[in-house]
Figure (cartoon, rainbow, N blue to C red):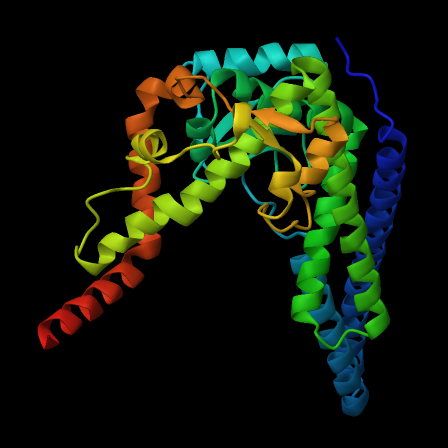
Length: 383
């Protein structure tokens, strides 16, 4: 079945179209400037050769200088316009290696009418995201990837993972289908070019900076509207209580991982040269042993109790309390599921995935870890 549009859909669609038109015009203007600067460079070099053969050396020098400047501008425009499109992050899972996970996604995708997922990538983050990119970078058939964080699938049950998949497939069905996918691609392309222009040309006029900032602010507003719309669509598929419970579960477990579990892992650097507890290898055990829902009466957590402790609103995601209020859910029950989605869908792959992300984590923290270990040893020796 196809998802019905929510009351937010007309506003979101209007902003998305306007942003896509602005992005296309901006990229087209830079493309036209590239053509003009390339033609000017070619003509200036040709004039310099002709003037030199006639003995007009000063004129040839001026034409040569103009050609060099035009060629330099064309070179910068090529570098900015044809910047590399980021590849999907994480470890790619083939369908035959994670059949149950692919089946779960296919089932939800059929219910939303948003089309299928080409590939799944497992990342080391507490996040899930739909990523689309043309096959050959900037052009080609549009391919769709689902990025699932390993900490995320350790944090939620199978039912909660279905709510997450419904949310992501709603993005695909309502905001990334057909021409809408290309509109999103144009917006992302333009934003990458703007970032490079701002970084490479800090002397750009203030008016240009203001236009770029306005584009970014509108893009952030669009992203928040898309989150609200996807939440409401997911609620129509799996129910608002389950979507709300999943949002709270992910938020609480993310806070547990960053404020408790990872602090305990890093605390080993004071006494061990290399960690005995690896974060991804021990994540499931750490979750089971250390995480607890807040102790509330009746096992129901009020939305208002989350307002003071929720994470600061990011530029792309609304605050948790706002998302729950938009769903019309004011109390959330703690999850009673005994098993995680990771055990259900990735059981035989977990050791290899954990090893991969632990190695990447160790490469990132190794220098800090060893420095902290040496300092701790020196302090102990002075005692």
